[in-house]
Image (cartoon, rainbow, N blue to C red; front, side, top):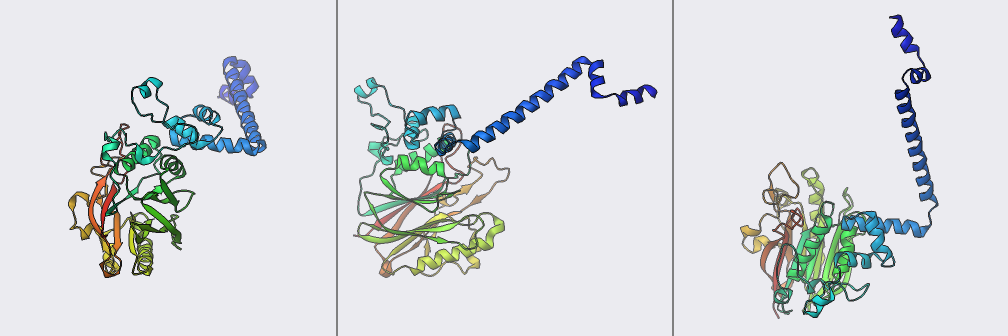
Length: 394
């Protein structure tokens, strides 16, 4: 017992003397901790003292790595060689120039002809999940019809961001829609789409966090004005993005939103849907109104509101409820979430209010897109995209 008590009374220096190797290890550990603390303080000091230019470059590097899934060294290299223009750097990273002999043999270069020039989204339909010749698939522009895609592209999922964003762009290139409604877009996505989609006008519902975007093909759709309608009681940064356009001489009001998510927020979601219906009905009778987006709706919620207003139709129902495009969020078939539960929902919907007198625009067909896995083993999004075609009565 006296020996135990004596051992307990030993000071660390005495223990170090008795056990020199243990004492050495303790000393080395303390030195490492001190060095680490010193480095952290120096880093904090450097960040505080760095110039605005250095701060901006650090932010650009972070954005580049988030989009490309590369490391900071690669980001700095591409940005520095492109005068710190992120769009040029991304273009150089995603679309490396082809060898001269390939071009001489008649190949089409995949990169821009010069720094800063964006690739026309509808001019290239190459992708890992769709081997379609762009010249064959590009539709002849026809005033007697137009097409629309609505898609929650799941920007909050950072996994395989580069591959999934590329896949989404490839689908848009393949179908060349006149109008695109995107939900759950994040700044890195927006940057990439802006770079790829120079032939579209992009109208974002926000620029922070995650948000919606409406894309309008410049050659077909003339933008007249746009507005953002807030949802006063949202807890998820949701709003209603509204644009007024002209297509083939017809005035349309186009709307998209990402209504409040999850079963627990049903009350707020129904309040937001009521705002959507109110805004749709406010438009002039001479204007066709189309709303599309990730509604997160359950049929029971629509029923609680007394179903749809008399002058507003659900296009899926109008087309006879085609089963092939019923479920737009399907954990049976879509494995992106690796969900333990199995659930099929019709979250993504398109509502239509025709112009007075029956209008000059009629929904013709609806299909799902994004149904094939990319080379990375995942789908472009956890939602399927919805492609809708309309006839224009001239």
